[in-house]
Image 1 (cartoon, rainbow, N blue to C red):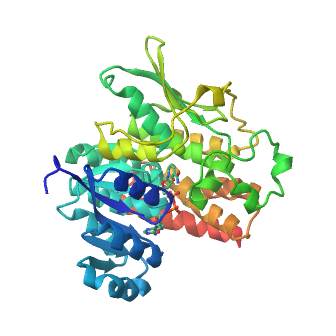
Image 2 (tube, rainbow, N blue to C red):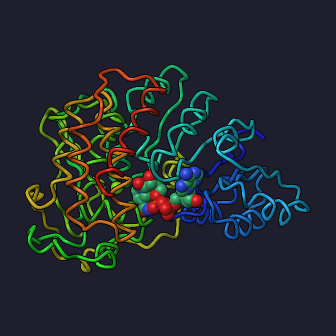
Length: 387
Ligand code: NAD
Ligand code: MG
């Protein structure tokens, strides 16, 4: 199948928030996209349902104990079924795949993304953790393979859209907008006893649990700052964060003549997903349109880094470089999982990340293997702190 006719899409993490929204986009654009590969961690039932509907070439279920269930359900549909970590990485190499949408969550995205790049596939990148952990390696590999990385994260999609036609013009700085999350305006003392139900209630976006907690701690914005550094080759001092509670302006580029371009629209991840999958084209859509009268004022505030210390930790990790962002990410993944499991309190998330960053071994120029080692070591250190 030639790419001119239809883009063949592999969705890594098809059962999640981004994955299911990507399938809605694909369903609404049958002339432009076909689903070639779907993968999921452990949600076999939804993966089966998706596969029966979209008829991909192949599916992978990460959890090997569910292989038989998936395989039994799909054998008479002519869909190849695989299971396990290796298959999750290798399946993107399939010839009919033109674009790999990385919609899995966390460090688990790193190896499949590297494989997809090595196989010359375009990357639609939702899995920001991959760039946080190993941005230098990933962007270098993409350059060497001549592969483009199209951002799905709404802020980075906004920057990317503002840069269309401007790629030769230097950027002075970018402003990543942040909603401020459910605890905007609160003080540290207010946050000591917040529950996970409160933290999971995001004002503007419905997302997976991990990124929703990251939004409540502002770690999500910290991860996005590091993601932006790698996507747009920026220096740390060129990246600023501004709180914009309405989430209408998705981010802003300021050029060297002082002109600023912003991208705006209703908060709906389907738009950046579609833009990444269809780039450089804009496909007409039925997404709800913005009405100015519904938003008589758009407001802006400084982020409160005193209360939301994770944002500061992410800036520190970015400035330190090397494997420090990988340490930050691993500690955060463990801390967020522990918070969701009622093992630690909200403010302890920051505390254990900070302590892990102080004690994990620092490596200035890590290899892929060393990133994997770092991730393991940092996870173990954080778990030890939580015990
Ligand atoms: P989610 O938890 O809803 O979905 C995660 C998906 O990945 C699921 O399909 C799950 O089965 C799969 N998965 C999880 N662990 C896996 C593993 N170890 N191996 C293989 N597959 C695994 O997450 P989400 O909210 O869709 O977020 C996905 C990524 O997109 C994250 O990196 C997140 O930061 C980023 N992102 C999400 C949003 C959003 O609106 N949800 C916005 C911007 C960026
Ligand atoms: Mg975002």
